[in-house]
Length: 63
Image 1 (cartoon, rainbow, N blue to C red):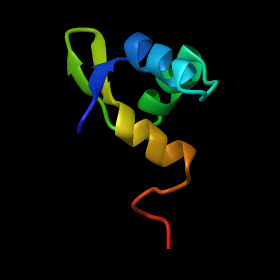
Image 2 (image 1 turned 45 degrees about the vertical axis):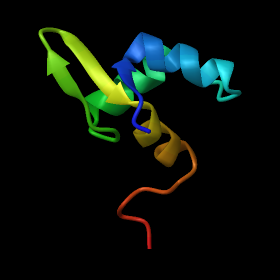
Image 3 (image 1 turned 30 degrees about the horizontal axis):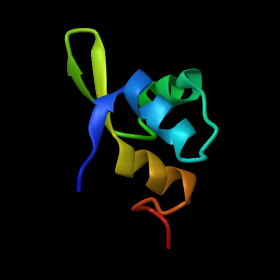
Image 4 (image 1 turned 60 degrees about the vertical axis):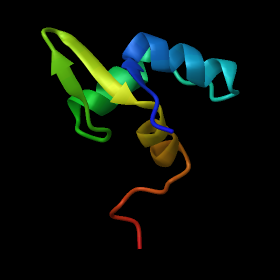
């Protein structure tokens, strides 16, 4: 299942699931292309699963 939402929504969901991460960190990851985002106007939509992969060090570039 793919969960997509705004940075604020995904941050809230992550915190509820035990991942203590700030909105600021997610915004930096989007800005630095650590996680992909789709923009609708000035709002970024990100994938919960993509953030979890980064948190668990399961990026595509990992060997």
